[in-house]
Image 1 (tube, rainbow, N blue to C red):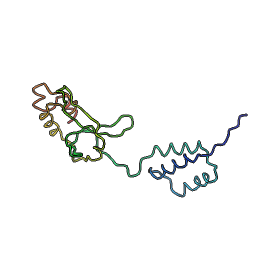
Image 2 (cartoon, rainbow, N blue to C red; image 1 turned 90 degrees about the horizontal axis):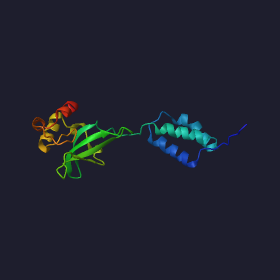
Image 3 (cartoon, rainbow, N blue to C red; image 1 turned 45 degrees about the vertical axis):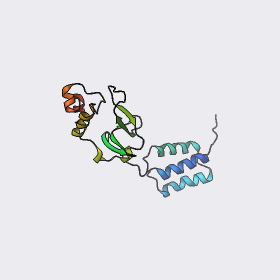
Image 4 (tube, rainbow, N blue to C red; image 1 turned 180 degrees about the horizontal axis):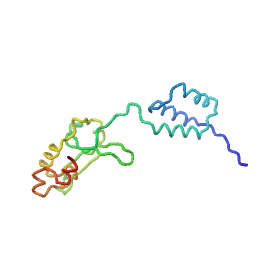
Length: 170
């Protein structure tokens, strides 16, 4: 019969667990945590159990987490620069990011989209573009704000947005 060797929670694990308790929203009270802390003090909490507790806390929301604006198109101003940006959600981690839209320097067929560090934290719902504002931007620049394509059809140029994107954005 095989025997297993007891491995207590390590000091780095314990420190990380304490840090997670401070930074995450969790259902534990000091009363419910007391037996765990006592087991740690006695060196009786297994490392495997600590790993499970850490994994559980990592899945819990941050305390004081900012809620960011919904995906869409927004006016922004940052460091003296202003313009239009798109907020997108990363499908892998659900984090939202802002990308500024720039006219192509080479006169290309598509807008240039650049990640804009910190811009998302400055946006509010009041900055969101309406369909009319998005169309006005398209008329001014000659590019569709939704798909970044150069508007060439006379009707799309007059509307400032292509017919497919107008349906999506409305």
